[in-house]
Image (cartoon, rainbow, N blue to C red; front, side, top):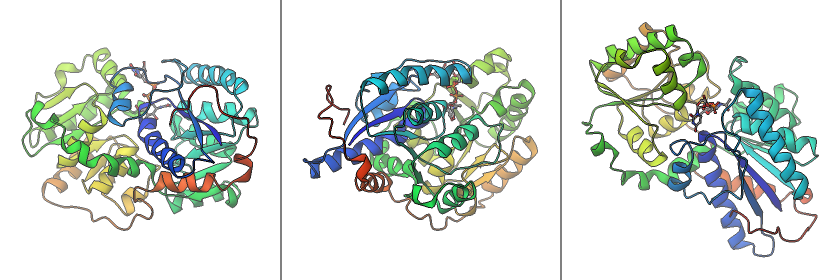
Length: 382
Ligand code: UD1
């Protein structure tokens, strides 16, 4: 099997690392039926802190192909990935294109492959926030509708896909790939010296914020900061700020508005971030993946959104939705500070073996394992 694995933005990198490891494991045991994998980095995220630091922390091999698309509007970014990727896919025959998550590079990769009649596998399929103002929701809907192999993290995701008319035989419930990455790196993260470096005491909160709906409007961002300033009187806050958020803080002149007990720092690498997350009293975020990671780590998580595409983290995990209303945020923080904790319930297949299940399914598919166009010229990325 020859497959192109597409990644482009920070939350993709945690999802490809376990896939690459599972391919390596498969190849070690199946020397006669290897999977040849080429890694394509679209370049949607390009800063060291948003990209290469993850390649180092997660031991992801150097990509075989860089598209260097960089920043732009949604259409520009999606279009540039498609134009770059189409040239590669036309030149080098492959059996499968695998995309992960829900960023613009995910949709661009799936769309390019589907139009060239190359089968598409989508890892983390079926998540729905049912909020179409989120660019990620559009990416999820469209990617799933043109994928041939839909690998889902929860049973609920299967139900979402069935409701949309996706044939059941295309859907495979395999568990959460983010958790593969989390378990694999827990011990390594213990070695991080980030707590000492930031001179933190045992009690602190970790904050991430980057959704356009929270950071792109001055009034909304200021309201959130108002709540954070109040919270910081009770517990210090560490705030590794996403480039989008940093830009907005400067543009809106809000830097001095933040209390000095809120440590505004550069985005962190995965291991440093994991160490901070594990040790935090609670986490405040608007990210997708962090809702899942905090659930498994049993750390309370307050999500500054009205909806989530990961409802299992609320029903079975430690997550609570707060929107961006300062009163609601402060109320939920007070509950946590009083010791109120949600108990986690069963999370089927969130066991660190999702990537292996995906590879096991793919190698049984005859149409993906025929063709035998010989070896790809350049050594594959696995
Ligand atoms: C993207 C994803 C989002 C994901 C997030 C995680 C889409 C639609 N959104 O949002 O799902 O949760 O990544 O980070 O794909 N920038 C830099 N340096 C970088 C990357 C971006 O300065 O390395 C700047 C860009 O110039 C741009 C802003 O950050 O102004 C946003 O980047 P972009 O990739 O468009 O979207 P994200 O908000 O990062």
